[in-house]
Image (cartoon, rainbow, N blue to C red):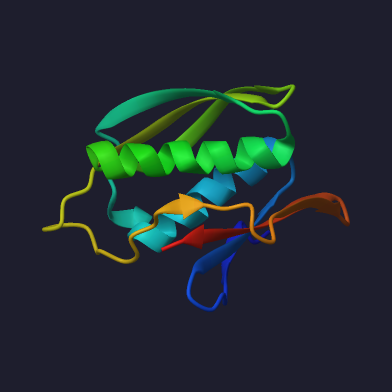
Length: 138
């Protein structure tokens, strides 16, 4: 099963992520986003961050989740390699993200993502799998 793919968005960047569960969908959306920033295969699991996020809606949770990951990249240079969701219930997510600080000597620099947006955001269950389209300001 495909986990994510890039979608062509004029002037911005977008991904379509897939998951058998909502947890998988959120992990795959995050990994798709990290793939826009750098090549995740070059990232090591040297440190971990714990995240607890909640929102008023599932769409809001996805945007908040991705924007929190963007915040950690922008502020601390942290880029994730693996994500483990500890809890996902009632528009709340608790997760542990393993990765390292971005090193321009070792990591390919791709796009500078400013934010995940609500523009054309969708989360749907189609043919037994979850699908989301999300656009990022770059």
